[in-house]
Every structure is written in C-alpha cells, then in structure tokens.
Image (cartoon, rainbow, N blue to C red; front, top):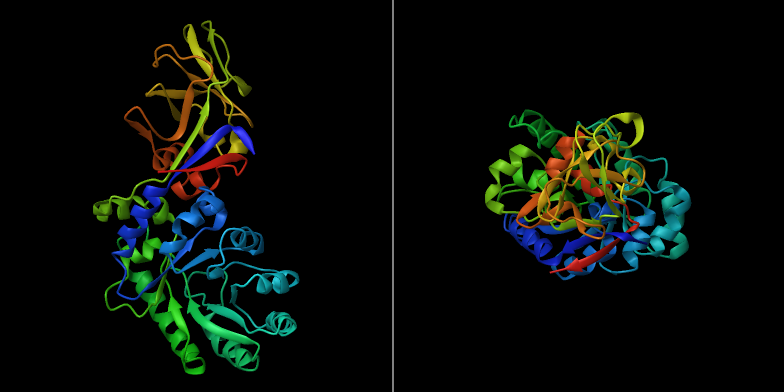
Length: 374
C-alpha cells in the first residue's frame, strides 16, 4: 500500500448521510449499503465497520468483493453482479444472496447449493426497459417455472434498476419501467408469495419513492458517500445537506523554478510564459487522477487553488505554485476535499475530466492508504 497518498474517510459524514437518506424511506423499508468498487473508492474495509450497526445489508458486485466483505462483516450480503459458475460454490459457502437472470445457470447454482446442503437465496433481476443484465419481461414466466423446479433455490426478491431519473425531470420512462416491473413482479409473486422487491438506488429514493411504496428495500450507494446522483437532484434535495466523506491527499515531491519558455511534461502541451514556480505531485492516472485533468484541473496547496499544468502522467503531474506563499517539498496537496476553507469537489473534478462524480471517486487507486477520521 502506497504511503505517498492517503484517502481520509469521514465516519461522521457517512453516518450523517445515512441518517438523512433513511429519513426519506417509507416506514419499515430496509437499507442495503452499496460498497462495490471498494465502497465507491472510499475503502470497503474502512466503510463497512462504520455502517454495519446502522444498515440491514451490504451489496457488492462479484465474488472478489464478497470475499473482501466477509473479512470485515458477517452481515447479510447481496451479490448483485455476475458470478461465474465456477465461483458459485465458494460464494454460497461465504453466505450470500445471488442474482439470477436466466435459466442457463440454475443447474450449476442448484448443484452448488446441494453440495453445501443449503438453499441458495436469490434475487431475480428484471430487465425492465434498461437493456442491461436481467431477465426480459417476456421470459419471466419461463424463469419462474424453472425456479419452481429447483427446491435448492429460494427466491428472496425481485429487483430492477431505473434507467434515467438522475438527469431528467421527465418521469415518463421511469413510469413505464415501473409498470413493466410491476407486471413481472406480480407473476413472480404468484409463484413465490414471500418474494420482496426493490427498484431504487439513491436516485430512485430521491425521485420516485413515496410513503406508499410497494418496495421493501432501497440500495444506497452514491448518496451514502455524500455525493448526489446528478445536478438536478442536488438542487431539488439540497436540504439533505449531504456531506462528502472522502478527502484525497498527497504531498509535493519537488518544488522548483522554471524559466520562461520552458516545457512542462509530455507532449509539450504547456510552455511557461514567464518564470514559474512549479510543484511535482506524485500521483497520476494510474492512481485515479484522470489524464483529462491535464491543463484543466486544480488542486489545493496552502489553502490556495493551483492549476494543473502540462499533461498528467502515469505517476505524477505538475502544478503552478504561484499562489501559495512559501510552498516547499513535503507540503500537503489536496486532490479532492477541503483545505483552508476551500474545497475541490468530485463534481468539479468530473466537469474538468468530462465524466461523472461516481467515476471520480471509484477510480481512486486501492494502493493509496485509507484511514477513517471523524
């Protein structure tokens, strides 16, 4: 694990965000904390112990993430991504609930459950007008019949995903999705009366859930970490006052003065127009600091914003240190988060790199040390 950079994760922010989002949930709705992608870059091993007493379950994507999860908690675990047949036995042995979306792998799943002398708990993923992993509505009846013939498998829930509620105020597609999902769920419910249902992630909770919701669980991801799913939802739900939980810091590796007319970094994309004090920052695109931030991004040094100059390289990039007084090697550099009353936000960084805040935090390298702070 690298000691060059550190990700500081605020336990207070995580708890605040969970409480704020729970307050929006209908009474009795369970919360699954989504900790896939290394807890959206925050660190699964650091985030899970903070949230464990406060949530009903954790959700991950694959077997490797389940294995990491089981190192820190025995709590209910939903594995809602693709798990190859060769990993089903190990996954079930670790205690988890899996997703099913076709009939092809039911035999392998039933065989693994039989070997372990247990019933495999599953969630049926319905592809309700999303066009991603999941059973098409027309194929639900066939999957239900196949499952009825597999006593080794227990259907816990049916679920789906909204396709377009973050970036639009037009609910028409969401309404169509809900209708398609409801019809599929009703068919599942006839065969498996105890089956629950869940449709919403953070965005669904903010935009679609009501007090009369038929869903019994919500999957909270991006909002837990203090980030809004989109600009429109940030505006409409500003009152939640979500708090970003991540602070990504490193230090200046070198400080030096370059004369006017001197190139900076690869490609000669930046040439100094005057004598310039520059700092070399020992992070790069292999660490999650996007190459798209070349000549566009900013960092904080000494409480001042310092522009990224030249191309971001694999392991380092340069900044203009004209603003902070007395900068020197070893000084803290904030890539994401607060310093001296200013803050570099994931949304800013996403705009500079032409991506989304999800990707900004999820790509922070696991090699950087993680530490929980209050």
